[in-house]
Length: 444
Image 1 (cartoon, helix red, strand yellow):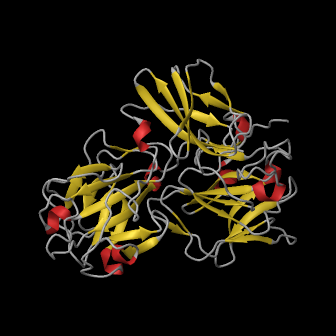
Image 2: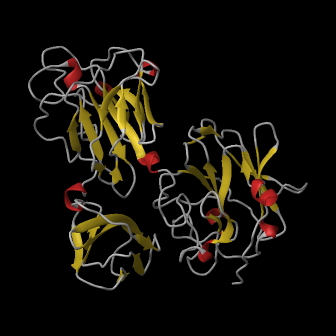
Image 3: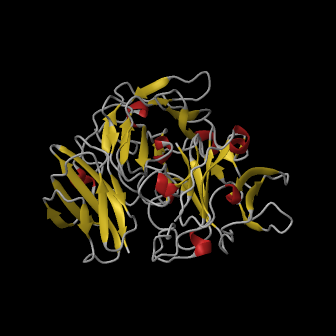
């Protein structure tokens, strides 16, 4: 494969961006060698289905891309390949990835991931891929002819977002990274956080509102907010702030302490006060001590990151006033907000899903007192996994989706044979001295 290194002029570089939108990565020629081109992770190579475009929102506010169109060429012979559905929003400083089709499998960072119905019919040369806005104007352009024909891998900006386009293999040892930066990390880690349940109006009928289970009803103490980490690595939420309103009248209700992490695919629950008693699934449970001064109406509860930007919003006015129970997503994490009593016969479920089960059955075995970074590839994998880390690995463990340990061994080798594993989702945990870290992988 011929590598071509390009220094793009300022004029060429700006043609790939539109306001706050930037084309960051394009795979128009996936490799047809075995499954090297299986970018969507479904275990099937398809030129049209595995092709993708990754668009970055370079703004601190979300961008509504509804109705924008992807075309396979900007010339007269071009045709529409994809139309963004209504209510499609790219979160702040995050990406949307559009695959041609297939069954999207695996982890794509915290990106918004979409797919077409009929594939993306991109040529390997001789066309300029374009995106039109809702007025029909060309707003984003990617000229494959200005790069290399038949690259058998994606073109990605390096560094991400700000750099020139290079073939992906020139930046890392993988051929593409849809949904993540070239090193496999999320663009905006805060995008991995999701408000899953909020109790801002606990019932004052006897102990019906005793959410913290200390046998004392308190409007402020029993109020809580539950935040889910959708990423496959722990999230450091230290220094983030919970506010009772996002208007000028809002005040800080709680600041997450130093070294506060939400485990992968798990939740943190913050009560207003009292003495949280009993079990709350396998969640991280915290206490604001001074109570949450949440109104039953007329405010938008918000969470700020360490830069002071609003990253999570919960608008109680869009729901019902004085519900006397929590609002929870149903299904958990992915669904719309419903009053909890509409989903089960209980009024709240802090720390667990609505049915009372833990979010992540593996939380008990993650043991993340200290952690370190590593890359794992290919993912999905068929025969072997390669670990890329600067740390010396002392122990490797593999778990199934239920948290059962399948393999445990001490090895200095960073190449692991997984041929004997059946197809499915697994977790690998690594230990280096007293540090642990874990990631999810898919065996095809």
